[in-house]
Length: 268
Image 1 (spheres, helix red, strand yellow):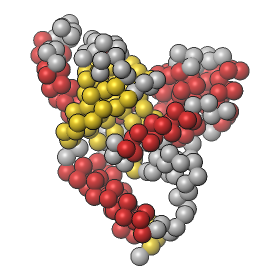
Image 2 (cartoon, helix red, strand yellow; image 1 turned 45 degrees about the horizontal axis):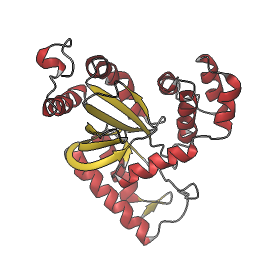
Image 3 (cartoon, helix red, strand yellow; image 1 turned 180 degrees about the vertical axis):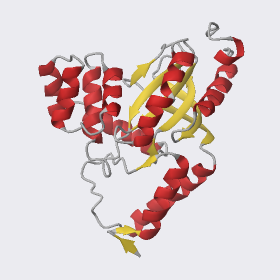
């Protein structure tokens, strides 16, 4: 049976699983020609079923061991490049769970792990373009601000102003941050970073990302822009879960976690 063009099993079950997992579910299609209004083929339904099964599996445990490499060349980062542990986040600026993570979990992570040189945080864009029509523009605006050295400031501004993501709102946020207006406006109007953003989306799909926020934890490669991932974390999980996972990763690299010897003891 179908409801508003969507199979009832999907319309009922996906939000339930998403709620358990604390993720914003959507299809971050890397193909700009794909429309959510298109009728689902049997192949589409099979893919949706597989995605649902993956989400249900993840809902039982938001953390799992993985063994993959992620190329994060050119991505926005925060924290020391030489940090022994890397945390990669796929996020969507119209995702409420991403917003919650940004304002509740990120501040202590920055204080305890990034500011002390233990963790580098990497930001990859994963706008759910079928559900969140302004998410792609917002991701582009963040990277346009990054061109002027203010990615983090724009990132926070976008999350604080979820109802100002239209063209006028993005321009106003850029002005409030003191960005050079001509260059910034030209960048957002031209969607200058769309190719990079869609590459992030395609990468996320390859890695099994089905909602946001979604995280991968690992170690940096040998100056090749790659992260050797050993754990994935699905959803906006509590701070203590991130602390536990990061501390285990730090110990594996021979670095004291902040809670083992005090914040004054950094990487060694």
